[in-house]
Length: 270
Ligand code: SAM
Image (cartoon, rainbow, N blue to C red):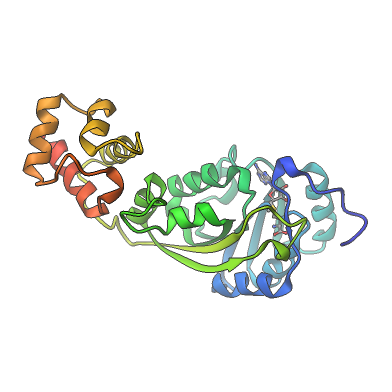
């Protein structure tokens, strides 16, 4: 590794990609076109940035580490299509950063904040035409999980509503410097043209999904009751109308069943 870089900071999830085949595979997965605008989160030492800058029309890279951001600014000074921002991605104002243009996201995310970053992408999903992200394997498995398995949860259902989620390939620790303690996975997220399911009321759907997974080993009935979404009598009526057994657990429900519950509850609550 280049001696002029500061030492990797664990607190910022700094595990830098050092395997060129993996870097190329990530680029291929992004399906970059010369007209594409790209957002990179955490460019770090610039391993991905270098290739993104060569292929994209415009590259916005957000790096929290002041020293790395300064080094990257120097390195890309002659490339006006590359903008390096020293910012926390969790605090970024996306409108200010990206304007009204559509972007692709390509990122090897800092694992310590990958879930909140994913939720920010979900909120801002209309800005993105494709997201290719490297994640800790466990988080990737949660995104791509199927009902009735232990990884299936809030993240799975809320992303499945708006995205085609694909588990692309696994990346072992040896492909990074320093190697992380966990395996990694690259996931692609392609936005759907509309919600996968008709939910009635989006806020209610989200509350319902969160309540259903609120207590992992409890029944759906207990979770919904504790979630305070409606009176117990209304919840009983809800499950009856939807022909969903309250003794099931949240993780057994397909997204279509969550949508049915949400639409029906929305009507019940008037
Ligand atoms: N993209 C580089 C690579 O693949 O070699 C570095 C990836 S490293 C896993 C994560 C990067 O995200 C680090 O450079 C780290 O400093 C940066 N980072 C950590 N927290 C951040 C935050 N809140 N906002 C933006 N960047 C952050």
